[in-house]
Length: 190
Image (cartoon, rainbow, N blue to C red; front, top):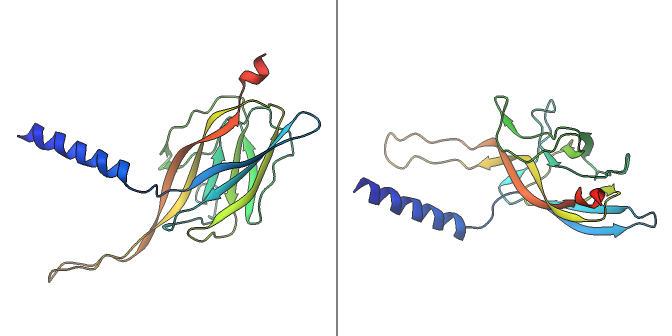
């Protein structure tokens, strides 16, 4: 009986996950520009859902951010940020952590540039941010990965029965991982 209940719960959970809307920050490539020198400029946009905001922090470990992993052929100094964002490129991409442990596990190839944009001004729920760009010397593109740390607004919960306590609204950090078109190292191997 317990095994049957467990299997039914697993199936119901799977159905709930696949039928619900995607409620998470999305990063997309909006445009690829082929430059006269053979390089390619990639334009990115970030879209938040209605329950997410982006908040700057007191340090790099507490502020919300977005990291694109393994950006092969990065042209030094080519990355641009929209207003309210700060760019950095690190060998090991900044990944959301909890108590020093990674909350998601992206593929991060050593000695390959990772692109990180950290928010410096608050971003409202449901916003779309454009104007992230970076140029690469690699023209072939493959499916890559990104991670993000966002702030999720949790609503207040009212106690229904007598003596049931209410829970105040609060904000919590959330880690995300997703797929994104990225330059391919295979283009350099030819």
